Length: 326
Ligand code: TXA
Ligand code: MG
Image (tube, rainbow, N blue to C red; front, side, top):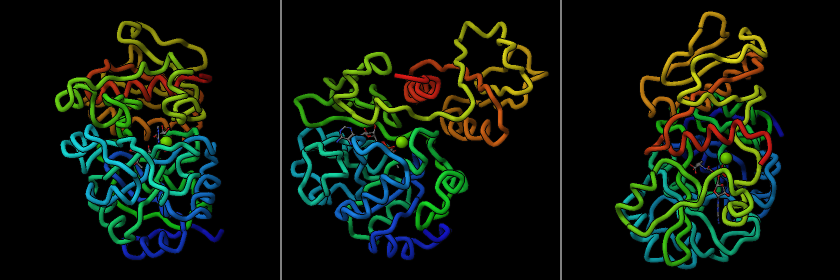
């Protein structure tokens, strides 16, 4: 593949997608890697470009809720209510799949995740294609997601046709994935919309247990059983009450720290990133992990957050980036 083009114009990016190409684009959560969800060859190239396991289904992105028939065969009552409340936005609803979507998009599942992003560039791009656009996060499989177009190129330059260069992502963590195919909605992946917010619309909404029950999660949302969000550095979680001292091995000079509160002894750490709020922490977390790799650091100490609102999604990503095996 020739080198990846940097494009600034949605109509140029849309033409590449309509031709079966791969285009990364900004959303309010993370950058996505788009491909035509009705084009078998394009989807095959997408899985190859990311090195993504073929059993991990892709989210299909639409320009408006009223386009749901482009991807799903049925809009269930719970999906209707949740989409009315949270779309466009960081919500993915899992619905019965339409045959228009090629089966490799969903890894053979008979359900499909649909999302209507909020970011204006994403909406403009998708609308200009007039297609359902499959878009996983635009990173090499297993690596931290990307919140800037420059980070996308670090992973995917030469492997994709273009990146639509836009602003950094405002939320910084992925959408909440909610199974809306059974009687009550089930939160499969914590994200930009919290369980409390979902329950304000549908009181019966509940969450799957997060990291511990890997087998159960694997069945419900296949992507969750693969390693995710991991830099080369080893991520070590620092609990709220474990801040008195950081381990001295490996050497602090090869270590980084991020969190809401300063580390106990910051004089010898190579890189420290502090955030004024949990929202800023969520927005910056993947970029912090990527920066540890740019600096060739060996250890990243990560201050755990408490699991309320966006903290629920951030804590989930913190745990996954530290998990060497599930
Ligand atoms: O915010 C986001 O959701 C971003 C942006 C680009 O929209 N996309 C994203 O895609 O995070 P990806 O591929 O990195 O993660 C998709 C997640 C995986 O955990 C996958 O297993 C789950 O969604 N998923 C997709 N379709 C599903 C389905 N039919 N049933 C259950 N889980 C599904
Ligand atoms: Mg991803």
